[in-house]
Amino acid sequence: MAIRHLKTGRPADLRNEDDEKVRATVEATLKDIESRGDVAVRELSETFDGYAPQSFRLSQDEIDALIAQLTPREIEDIHFAQAQVRAFAEAQRASMLDIEIETLPGVILGHRNIPVQSVGCYVPGGKFPMVASAHMSVLTAAVAGVPRIVACTPPFKGKPNPGVIAAMHFGGAHEIHVLGGIQAIGAMAIGTETMEPVHMLVGPGNAFVAEAKRQLFGRVGIDLFAGPTETMVIADDTVDAEMCATDLLGQAEHGYNSPAVLVTNSESLATATLAEVERILSILPTAETARKSWEDYGEVILCDSYDEMLAVADDIASEHVQVMTDRDDWYLENMTCYGALFLGPRTNVANGDKVIGTNHTLPTRKAGRYTGGLWVGKFLKTHSYQKVTTDAAAAEIGEYCSRLCMLEGFVGHAEQANLRVRRYGGRNVAYGTAAE
Image (tube, rainbow, N blue to C red; front, side, top):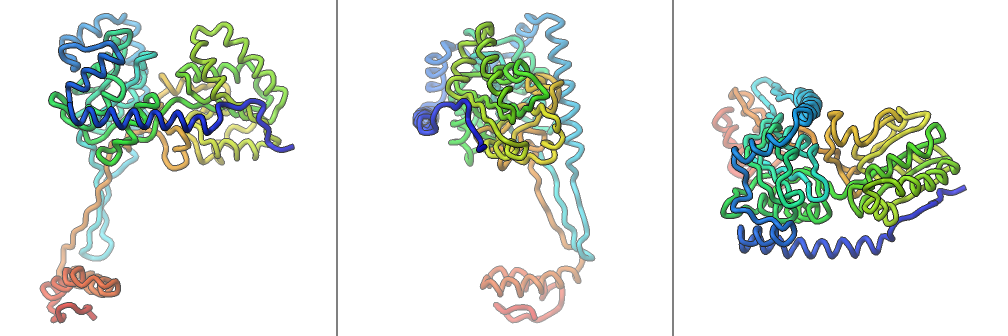
C-alpha cells in the first residue's frame, strides 16, 4: 500500500497565489516606510491597529504602570518561564568558546564570538498576546550580551498588553515600542526619525511579518523565516485520537493558515482522529480560527511503515514535530529536517511554546532543511583572526602564499606575500614572480 492522504489541505497553487499577494503588499509598504518614515508608520498603525499614540515608545513610567496591572501570580509565572529559558540559553552560550591555537611555530589563529550590536525583537500580539515570544527573543539576546535590544509588539485590543510588556522588560529590552506588523519590522530595519535602525531582526509573526523579514534580509540580518505556526504529529497506535486531535488543534488555533499534519501508520487512529477533531472543534473557544486552519491546511497522511513516516516527516520539515510512538528516540536519532522535536506523550508543543526552556522561534516553510531555530548563537558572530609572531614564520608562510597566488594568476596577492619574504626572510624575490 502506498502512502495515502486521508485528508489534504489547500492546493499548492492557491497557497502560492496568497504568497504573491502578501509579497506585493509588503514590498509597497516597505517602500512607503523608507520614503515617509514616521508619517507612514503612524498611518499604518492607525489603519491596521487603530492605534496612534503621541509616542509608540513606552517610557519607564508607562512600563511600570503596565506591570502594576498584573497579579503577583502572573508576575511569578513570567519569572518562572524566563528562568527556564535563561538556564538553557546560558548553557548554550557556555558551549560556544573563543579559541586560539598555534598551527605552526609563530602562526596564531583564533576566533571570537562577538554579540550582534543591535537587535530588533518582534513579539506578535494582535490576535493573542504572545508573552512567551518576549522570553524567546529579548531574553535570549540579553544572555548573548547584545548591547541594544529593541522590542516591538502590536497593541492588543487597542492598548499595550501588560503581560507582554512585563516580559519584554524583565527579559532585558532597552527600548519597548507598541507597534506591530510590517510597520514595526520596517521601522526597526530601515529606521525612522524616531527609531535608529538595528543590525538584525528576530522573532515570529504572521505571513506579512515573515515576508517583510525576507525582503529586508541583506539590509539587516534575520534569525530565520518564522512564519505562521506549523505542527506535525507522528503517532502510532500507542496513543489515542484525543491526544492526537488535541495536539493538532492546539497549534491550529494560532491563525487561519497554520498547517497541522498527522502522520501515522494506523488507519484506525487516523480515522478516529478525524472524528475527534470535529468533536473538539464543537467545544473549543478558538474554534473559528482552528477550524479554518484545519479545513485549509490540515492533513492526515497514512503510511505503511515507520521508515515511510520518517521520510514523509523529513520531506515536510515541519516547525513543531510531536512524536508519540513505540520508538520516539529512533526518530530523535534519525530525523534531520524539523524545527523542534517533542518526544513522547508526556510533553507537548505548548510546553515548548510557553515554559519548558527551549526556544519557540523555529523555522517554517521547510526552512528546517537548512537551519535550526532561534538560540543564543544566532545573536553571536564568530569572527576569526590571525597573527604571525616570528620572522621565520612570516617567511615560511609567505613562500607558500606567493606560489599559490601565482598559481591562480593573482600577482598583486603574491606581492603581499613576497614583500614579507624579502623583509622578514632576507630573500631577494623578483617582483611579480613566485618565491621558489
